[in-house]
Length: 292
Image (cartoon, rainbow, N blue to C red; front, top):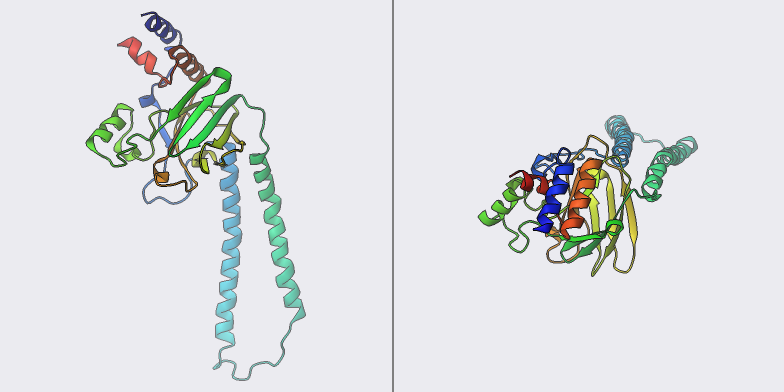
């Protein structure tokens, strides 16, 4: 009764700002038959997409140039058009050119790609710190600064099939059948506009923590602590999905990651609600319960 009173009080204090899971838009997820990248929710991901586009332009130009040379050689130097081939074996200017020009292209690409890499690897001071531990086959999360810890399993784990029961579990959590193999029973909750540092490790074998829309991927190696960081843009509140991206055993394909990005006020409400409850609380769940 006392716990219910505390939760109701918190809901009243934050009720105007807390968003329920069903109210969060699903932004970062794979689309059937789609090509290209997912929605870019961070500066890191925008840098990656920009670099990819630039390199794609360069390799397209090179491919077209090489194809044009091949066509020219086929037409100009075939046996019918050129029955008496030349007898020389070297052309110094051409050999210098095809050595120097590729080097210049690689240096040009490196001048832009290395800053993108360094930005990812130079970890800033965290405004929100989360520890992610990979297990066979689920993730464990800790918020050390707030003494919060919980585990995250795929909805439908164990069956690994979209049964009517699993479909109902998805619906109860605010997801559709399209999110099967993507949605988890609990989620990392982070605020937008804040620097989030995730410390990653493995408890048994090597796993990998990946959120494509954030442009982050870090192997979780047993006995080692590695870090990644990201900052979700303000206005990009929503749900983002990822996967373990390192082959880690029999159920590797059933080890998804769910991140819910909310506003700062909603994040603070979730922290307080979860600490009071002593276990993971769905963002907005207290508000919904108190209003019924």
